[in-house]
Amino acid sequence: MNAPQTHHPLPIPNGWFAVAWSRDLEEGQVQRVQAFGRELVLFRGRSGQPVLLDAYCPHLGAHLAVGGRVSGDTIRCPFHGWRFDETGGCVEIPHARAIPAVARLKSWALVEKNEMIFAWHHAEEKPPDWEVPTIGVIGHPDWTAPRRVDIDVAVHMQELAENNFDPVHFEYVHGMAAPPPSEYEFAENGRFVRAVSKTTRETPMGTFDTRLVRDTFGLGLSTVVSDGIPGVGTMLFVSVTPVDAGHSKMRLLLTVTKNVADQLGEEFMSGIVQGVMDDVPIWENKIHRERPVLSELDKEIVDFRRWTRQFYSGIDGA
Image (cartoon, rainbow, N blue to C red; front, side):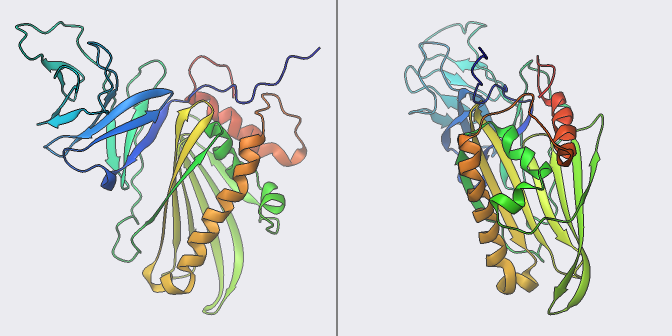
């Protein structure tokens, strides 16, 4: 008798993952964050820098995000007033003459860019070994202010990333014509994959040879950019964060060049969001086949899964 198929047996991958929108964390504000299968506390100190720590006080276990307060660039525990700085170290115990050396919390490496706050997760506690890309069109004067969208999905995050390497599903899930062939470029020893699709488009401005460029950075970050029509562009930036091994949080930033915002901006943005929502019932009810039966059309999925191995600790493949 075969063993039952686990729903999502993959562990949480290593990499950079968004834990908050930048503008949602004001100076002196404290947020509760659930990510990487852990409870975390995020706050912005008076210097303006965000700090992410494990949430439970090492003293008697109070959750620092539930009643905790910012004090300078530290956070104060709501239970007994212990204060912790950006390193996770305890810097004050009221009325105590000494601070135990073990009075500390895990501090998470953070980067703030692209209107998000990213945390570095590594199962072996290794330091960051690649950088979050800077998306140049975000905030550019020729592009619209980005639209923000949050979507929670009950699925392991690798399933979301795999869609970029599965062109056949666009016909059956999204009702689209079969997309043109894509050229894939995998960085063998890096964290980057690029997929480029080329097509000729008829527009009111004329006929153009256009490209759809899909860049993937690790398992959590990707962009989809169109180009080829002079002065016209659309851009989707996606960040996916593992809440735990079976739940993911998607954060989407969508923007278009201002010169076509009224003509196609809303259609582009609503179409992207609807496309994601079309995928959700599939994602939330599928299982992860570690050794799927594949056809000749699935070469990119094989290549993608081989590439993903670098983002996991302690497993041979994905």
